[in-house]
Amino acid sequence: MMENKKLIEVKDLKKYFTVGNNAVLKAVDGLNFFIREGETLGLVGESGCGKSTAGRTIIRLYEATGGEVIFDGMNVHKLDRKQAKDFTKKAQMIFQDPYASLNPRMTVGDIIGEGIDIHNIYSGKERTERIYDLLHTVGLNREHANRFPHEFSGGQRQRIGVARALAIEPQFIVCDEPISALDVSIQAQVVNLLINLQRDYKLTYLFIAHDLSMVKHISDRVGVMYLGTLVELASSAELYKKPMHPYTQALLSAIPIADPEVERSRKRILLEGDVPSPINPPPGCRFKSRCRYATDICSQEMPEFRELEKDHFVACHNV
Ligand SMILES: Nc1ncnc2c1ncn2[C@@H]1O[C@H](COP(=O)(O)OP(=O)(O)O)[C@@H](O)[C@H]1O
Ligand code: SF4
Ligand SMILES: [Mg+2]
Image (cartoon, rainbow, N blue to C red):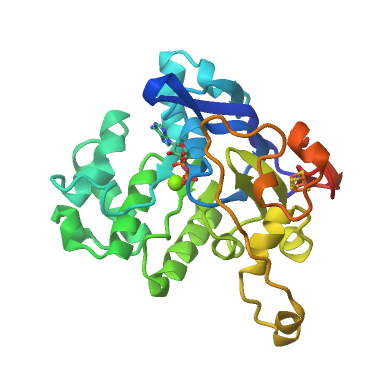
């Protein structure tokens, strides 16, 4: 796995929105990471920290304000029309809300077939067979093709969303909180489906979640986001065993551990205060308003995202 080439490289990526009174909202403000082919990178952080915006900008649903995304050697935000259309075939997205993300007036077959039509991949009988295959692949069946989204449960709808993303055989899928809106009892089924599909089709995932416990099982490496930037990035095993950033430590301390021995000796770290606004974010470290270890330098300089141990990156002055 670790020898695989880098499929995606995100370099100092920025996405700003102009909001009321010409204020600038820095939703994503300098992201740096790569994802290897066949790998799952988990991306975690509280609601509003810029995860969805990052995912959307990476696959070019949004133009970038700055920085770049290199996909298989191509600069994603500098493609001509033909290359751009080609890229939409390679990179797909699964959305958080399986209710809002499926057009209620389209049949399941047409929802899944939309990409096939846009890219002229199959027509007629072949198209129908392909849709039946996809339904089967995600654990549904051909009788479902003529029904409408409202006839399905949340878990089934998310399977439809997965089939739609798979239809044009992408290499890379941004899974944007695909299980957050589902009942806990079916979350694992959808995660297992995604894991099996990754193995069968050599997919590369960016898997977004707001909770570290959700990404642990599926991710090879995990990045922790805070207010538009990454504060820590490491292999899953390393991050859970040895979190270095105060924010990661606080997030992890909130997750119960199965081992009672470890659980008893642990301290809960309560996160006090609010996340600052991404409009005019404070200078220096963005976490300082909630950090127990903040010192003078934290208000003055933004900590660099440094590789403190092999493959373990942290943005903090005082680690
Ligand atoms: N289209 C948009 N226009 C203006 N602000 C936006 C837009 N999309 C997201 N934001 C803002 O950007 C920040 C990050 O949002 P988002 O990427 O959705 O975070 P997350 O997915 O981590 O919850 C939030 O402050 C949000 O209000
Ligand atoms: S840089 Fe300072 S404020 Fe930021 S996390 Fe590290 S110690 Fe806390
Ligand atoms: Mg989101």
